[in-house]
Length: 88
Image (tube, rainbow, N blue to C red; front, side, top):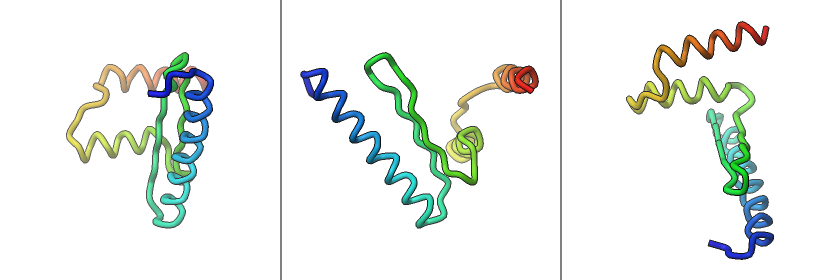
């Protein structure tokens, strides 16, 4: 762990940018569906990237289907649908 908070934040920003760059590259070069989610330790800020031809929700659904791990249940799906309906 980098003890100096300024150096840690600078390293985090540079590495995050590098990871997102690699995610874009593998998506374009290999026609892969890519999703990356990163939470900063300073404040827990969310950073995400998703391939242009898909959504993070679709990628997570595929992950859930292929891994057999349940990420959310029916109650959460119905709440998510209600939120989407209200947004529209």
